[in-house]
View 1 (cartoon, rainbow, N blue to C red):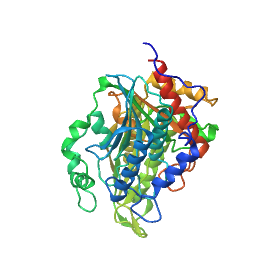
View 2: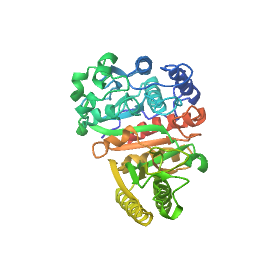
View 3: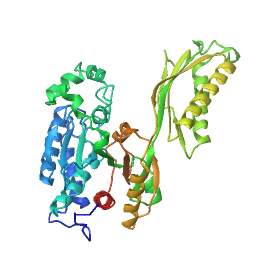
View 4: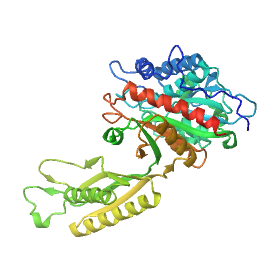
Amino acid sequence: MNKVFPVPQPAPAPTHAPLDGTAITARLKELAAFSDVPGELTRLTLTPAHKRAAAQVSYWMREAGLTQVHMDATGTIIGRYPADRANAKTLLIGSHIDTVRNAGIYDGNLGVLTAIAAVEALNAQGIRLPFAIEVAAFADEEGVRFLSTLTSSKAVAGIFDPKSLDDVDPQGISRAEALRSFGAPVERIAECRRNPDDMLGYVEVHIEQGPVLEAAGAPLGIVTGIAGASRGHVRVRGEAGHSGTLPMPMRHDALAAAAEMILAVEARGRTDADALVATVGTLIIAGSAVNVVPGEVQFSLDVRTLSDDLRRRAVEDIRTAVAQIAARRGVRASVDIGHEVPAAPCHGPLKERMAQVVDSLGLPVVRLPSGAGHDAMVFRGILAIAMLFVRSQNGSHNPREYASPADIGLAAEALYAFLIKTAAEM
């Protein structure tokens, strides 16, 4: 196909410098002001603060040159940057603007604002590509307000579960009610679906949320895939008794047994430490008291890896270890896995193109998996996906999460260059 669009050399420098990391950081701070809790960033899905943030994002989209900016039936804000020709395919880019409680300003929001910045740079130079771009500010990724989550991206993927409309928040408000109050046309959810035949894929920029890039001294990272997860709980039942009168040899201590089981979970994770993580994050001791031998304990289980086969084997190994410990200690134990999500590998060609772009910026090419879930994961088997991580400090989901303006600027440049390179290779 003839290339009819200009390929700029060097990178753009419009008067308002949309790819400048300091400018994007300023917008991140401006967006953080939209919070439902004074003094912190708490912007749960479909709340008044979310609605104000959505309005601000809509304004920035229009200012950047995106057209057809609208709210879809799940509360997502979507804008379109048309192609240079009719019947062109579409590339979806973006992330989410809902947050956890007492959040940092970068998680999710960074991906939306770098997407807007990349389009703004194209528009400032009058560049149209042989594909359209849609920027999405998804409404529901964090899953804090309602039990179900990722409903916005699931609607775009065509896998939205109508039962999630009946989910109720702690105040008794259903998701359907919240959507109507938000102004979303909830009756048109089926229209959110994109036809995979019309799409090039989905690309998301996100802070890493972990320490790998910082340890490697690398500003950006190429995500190899999003780990699959098995989550559930282990229940251990022994016999409660008085701590002063029950002899040690006669005890069936559920907590002591659970402690050994938890160490077995950790040991299984360490067995494949380069590929697998296994975590116990909660512990509930029924009827706990300082002078009672615990009779029942429940703890959580979270196993993640890019290999679904390895994840399943690890869960079975943990089941076996739990059963053996229970038998030896004279307690009963059950392992209940209630949440299974398969791994979502990133698309080879898109992933390699992103790696080439990072290399062209003179940066080290670091490849790493994502242990955390993202909107991108719902497109597994539906759309090609790629993710670019940005070096972050202090993890994520807390006010101390941080990405430097310099690194943010590099991410915006990389996304812009990715769009140009994608066009050149069509």
